[in-house]
Length: 257
Image (cartoon, rainbow, N blue to C red):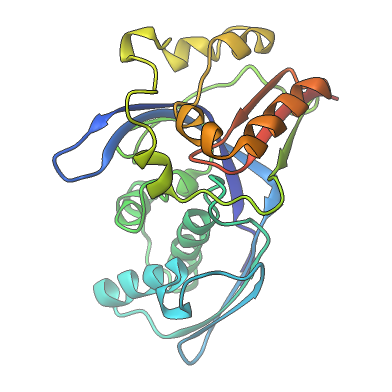
């Protein structure tokens, strides 16, 4: 079985506060982008994973696809599988590539071995693998809270036939989530200054530049001026809206077709 886990972007990202468990509560809008995908093949066979494409900095056994298999194997005893993963989505970019791979692995294994898990069942298990893994189960625009695992479907005014989303990463730039949070400090906007994202996306896209913000830009841009410069370059090229996604380093621009 072969599938193509896609990436996501964040329309706005508010860091609400730190939780007792060490994680942070967030508010964001996840939007799937299907133009940039990994390639994932799973067949029944001796347990293994082969990673091609963009080199990853983790050991194969630590890959989220393997963790997804272990989760279902331990719970349901599903057989061993051989996994072939070609990485096209850069890591450390805020695009959710690893989370997407994990979620798609759960969905594929559920289908391959006829487990009969519902989307709700899969979301609960995906959330155990990573903060935004659950989003990729239904893989549709959603307002996310908590650590990114509490999802509420939303309707966007964007029409795919009239707009395109370009995603770029400045050469050599990489931002770890730990780095982004460490630099956040008092630079982020006070919560009272933020608009409600669910209301903001109902406004014309031309207004989003002054309504929808990513808190991490305040901490990442000073340390990575190339990322800030790319966002401004997107606007110079004619983007209606541009932003860093997640904790960086990727920047997206929404353009009229």
